[in-house]
Length: 491
Image (cartoon, rainbow, N blue to C red; front, top):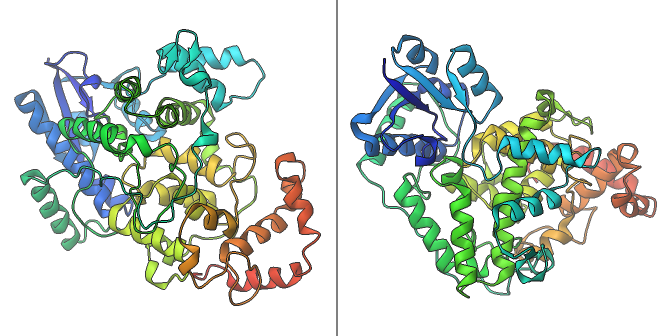
């Protein structure tokens, strides 16, 4: 009996094998794409990455194209092991198939290390900042002895600059991979599946923008560290209409496919800082995202009860409208929202601020059901997985967990978008206006959100001041009528 490591499509790097010559099983399940409408480019990227890995492994890999995972596993004669999968559903599946599950890989903090950190907290909140500092010390990343490099742990105050007054940031575009015969085969198969009526997608096909192999992923890391990391920190929260990539790394997809280990990436970032090529604020800001926030989200996904994904503390009951779900940006007048949907349609990706303060902010203001918003984010983004989107959307974006992830709702009006982007100057809406034909849907929506959820948010001191401001709005009744009539129409 051959011992074989079963790799899911998000476990594709060498660190998911015990030995370089391990035998491998990869299963391409058509049912995964038939059950839900994913972005076309996400489907392409997943299949391309899996097939590239199979080609690298050669005869050591048994690559099976089937309808379901179960039908393959049940008839195999190999002894299978699998690294802990990244979702509750996948873990349930492998356990039901009696496959041996080994500890999770691909994260900087192990489950045992996180459990020890939680136990040490006692009854204190599981704060990201404390978790991040613990990870920095334990991994010895950006540390000068026992002190943080640069003299402080957190350079957020330097990493919130509005965009410069120019069309683009002025840095090199990211390195783009070159498609090959595997990509051609994937595109042919997806076209055929659509013609046959087996699957349907959202978004448009296009050139592959993200790494699908280990070599491509390592090339992308080097390119980012050399060309865009120096300006990453200051403008990581800024948006420019003509520059969707800014200084972002585009490494979230290859990281979430398991092509890269986060520890090797932060070491490359630290090397650039130590060489004097990157300011500490940029290096720290990126390291915080990777071994701080990314690992924090992963562990909270498993630490919280399974019912967490269904939490809806603000009682949002609205249905995700078709124009939003299908990325119909052409019928949206609000410049920031239209452009964000357009970029997702074209690329299956936007960076974290459009996700949080445009898409998530708008959904929360409108009171759309958090479970529907979470599912959409999972399907629409090339880097979206269950463990990524459940905490990020339910907790961070929609405040549906009542404050487990965030100390206050990430709700903001048009003033925030005006300050952090160049959208508002060319928009038909005015971010300073909340009632009338020129009323910004984000400004109006912000006050309508506070009004609708006043009782639920009343005890939160971080939002007490704007709640008191509701009583000073002379046009509150008019705003309520306006926003009820707007409903789920495209703004």
